[in-house]
Length: 393
Ligand SMILES: Cc1ncc(COP(=O)(O)O)c(C=O)c1O
Image (cartoon, rainbow, N blue to C red; front, side, top):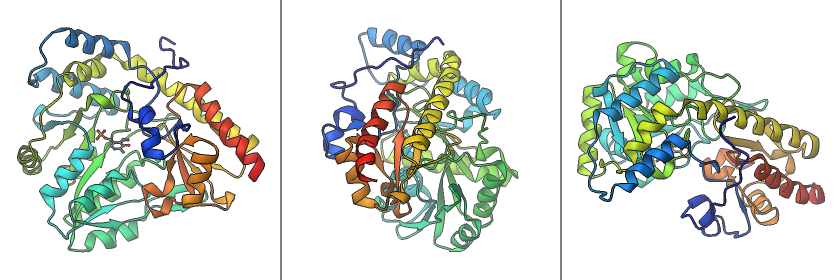
């Protein structure tokens, strides 16, 4: 191991949303932050070096996106997923959440429906409602501790003439599914047949656990299906640099790309951060070993949680993750849910998890635990829950 993921780094007073904002967001100053989706690991050294080098130049004026940005991205996506992107398909953005909003504005009208599969990353629902569109919730099916898509329901929803767009999360946050090729193909074909454009959020696609393979939805099916998809990638989860605010949008269809770009221009939201350039270039060309080691570390953390729960807290069930560093824990056997469950974990145990019901009503019996942290922090979090669990359950 070159990287020391065991190292505990104090993040308080660094302007960290996860650590410095915990009281305001979770209402419990003493909570150990295991919620927002960034990791407590140092970024890869080549990325840090590249940003520091740029920071030492004394002028931070408006940036210009050079071809190196595209070249580095094309290298990475080809290496990771074997998808050969064309430079003209790429649009750089300051995050993926802004793309949800931009695409909703670009391809739907107020009152139209946007399909999502809850429980799912909550800013998808916020983006739909904030823009005056309606959520069409194609709830995932949860059976025998595992999640699948409800394709019959999806077809019905896609056939509704008011449904114009679907936001897909692949791999899926929070349930940790790495969708299989057949599943992605079905989503894509149902949407294409019914004139529903797809935004496929693949931000977690590098964090594939236990040898699971990510398949970009945009590589599947006919040319027409491929052109119906806008895919979102970013170095932010993989290399723990979400605060740099950069993401890559792949839009092979000229029409959709122009709609996206013109809406971005209208919103004046296309400008990159000056530090995004060196960060993304370094991440996508010099940090392969970081990801290899990170995945091993995260798998070990998942194994640790699984064993810990089985041995000490058998009423909390791990939904086996195939991807991401966010664990979805089924607490239905505790007999408490929603506010009571969140209150128990956050205020009694003092662990700052994400509430399951923040991802949709389907999540009321669940909590999401971020395990992107040194194993000693993880142990501390689980010990805090166990202390209270053994008294109450
Ligand atoms: C599925 C998913 N999409 C998007 C984001 C955030 O994207 P960005 O920070 O680029 O807006 C996250 C962060 O947790 C996420 O989990």
